[in-house]
Amino acid sequence: MKQRLARLWKEYYTEWREKVEWPPFAQLFSTTVAVLVGSLLLAIVIGVIDLLFSTIMRGVYSLF
Image (tube, rainbow, N blue to C red; front, side, top):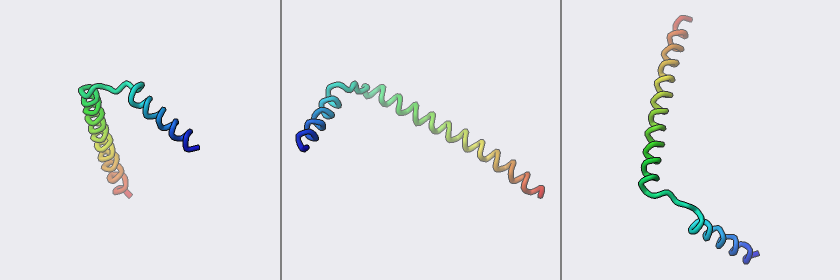
């Protein structure tokens, strides 16, 4: 059992080090920035929509 587990981990490590193609740092950095900017924009849009709906609902609730 220990041998099978050791072989499995060795195969995982070998695949991770030799077969996985890692992106260059510049590409990694640019895609990370793109994801952060996109997430920030999405959060702002959702926040504005939430503010708009809550203002509308407060107006509707004040009628009753």
